[in-house]
Image 1: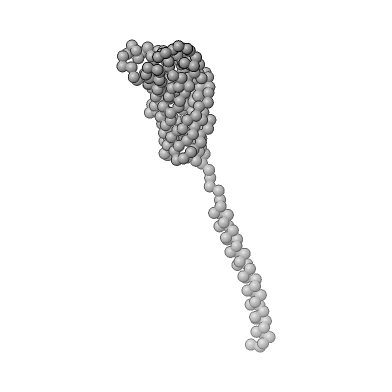
Image 2: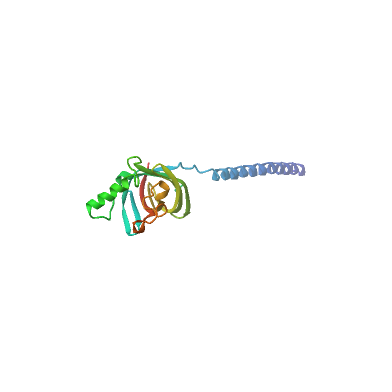
Length: 222
């Protein structure tokens, strides 16, 4: 092969190599970019879930104290739900059927019946006019694990006030359990019977303003 032919062949190979390498490089870059874009594709967000409170398995108990002792009993939930987003409680509400209120500490039936009747009367909850109380969550701040700081609006006898309390909320698949103690100042709901802040010289007849509502709610995803 002549020197001229060798020179021409070398020039052709060099030109072909110069053309092929950038093309291969561009193809590789495109492949990397495609993989990068695929990896960054957003994950589809799940819609919030609604959980309905089970009235039968849920339990509300109350505790009220007076100068000479205390009384306690139960009252039933009549309706309720929770909304969960990304496995975190976001909102919720429940109703309390005040006509179901019972006393658990008085064994004597006439005394028990008298207390329950008084609680349902206008002296206390006026259940004929206001058969239910309602609590609505306005804020659920997760503090750690299953612990939340709950704020909400409690309505009794048509009067609404803000209350706040810590709660333990366990979310496990399709089930929720919410446990809390709500301390309620009854005088804010026009229940002032034997309150030392409104009546004088009550002596040992005083009934303390605050009562506790112990909440244990079970709910199932819908």
